Length: 115
Image (tube, rainbow, N blue to C red):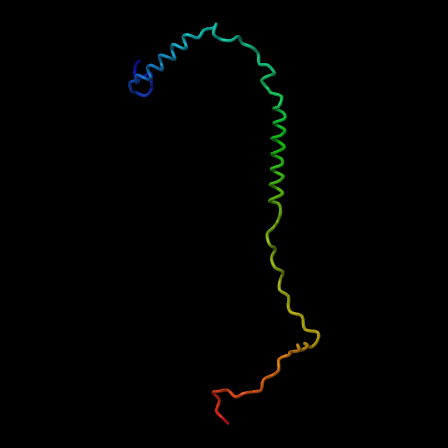
């Protein structure tokens, strides 16, 4: 063979030559007697479970879309705080809280001048 037949511009290797010879021999060995007779396709080529499979895939896709809408449709973001309100004026006087602590007598400060 020449270099133009391979398209690479290089000489074919011995492995390529052997592969080409084997493929040519196989092609020459096949004849009309070795082929099966032509038949139209039968209904057995389409299995019965194919429509069931299509329905199941459709239902699964629909369930995925519903789940996606349900999970992303919720607004779980925190709401902004309400605006601040001005304090209301007290309606009455505050009542003192009773205490059980007795007042201690006054003592002069150590840094104060003595009387």
